[in-house]
Length: 341
Image 1 (cartoon, one colour):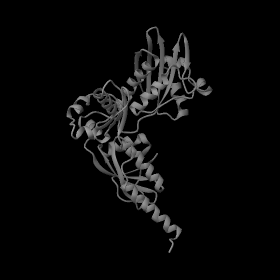
Image 2 (cartoon, rainbow, N blue to C red):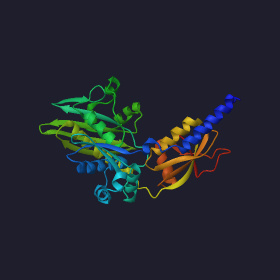
Image 3 (cartoon, rainbow, N blue to C red):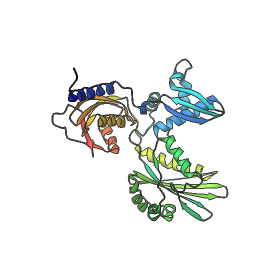
């Protein structure tokens, strides 16, 4: 006897929800993978561990955990749980680190980390050589400057956006404003890209290499940094890295021992929306895991394991577009209700 199509649809949805509850953690809870160039395996492990910690924290900060973690490992178990090593080619190693262990180490050591959504900053960059100033973008990269910043964004897990560099950008973003640090028109021009802030970067080639000056603008604040290097790419990388550290420092928090909260979300319609919400939450450093508590109509209640107090977590979720909401009618109980702004 065949099922009525509507009955079949309901069963499929219930089965999907059941499997989702049992599903493993999202890909964001997988290993932290880094590739490093080093002379030997021991050096590769040390450098790779430092890179993995910086990526998880979102910034460089003290205390540095690398030496302590390396001293604490044991060949029988700890090191096997921490990483899997593979020599990709000569002097290059691919390392996989256990994300949960590193998060726990950062928390236990009281190291501040960017626990919420990391801001996307649009980079207005000017390359200067021999008196000629070029606005960089998709059409013009300069001598490896944007490529170096792309590597930095991946290493920090901090999104950096690059302009098209088309006619509209050239009209709105004047190189003289970038070089002079005139931020207001450049922040306005960045609205086209829906960025959370901007980075003004001026890279100037010199007889001995290159110099870079950066101004990061986020949440109404400006952060200035500078660096020099053997080439424009390395100077730009270091200057922007220091600026990102300053931005991240204001956003970073120290998580406590995780506890469970029941958060309700209004306006979640259908299985796909629920799945996207759960994945979005588990991408945040503040959320260790999220699992289904109840689902009814267009609202859902999730059990969220987090190291933040309820009000701190809700404040952090503002960066992802959530705000407090009234409890929906006939909704299940929750510690707090949220909705998209």
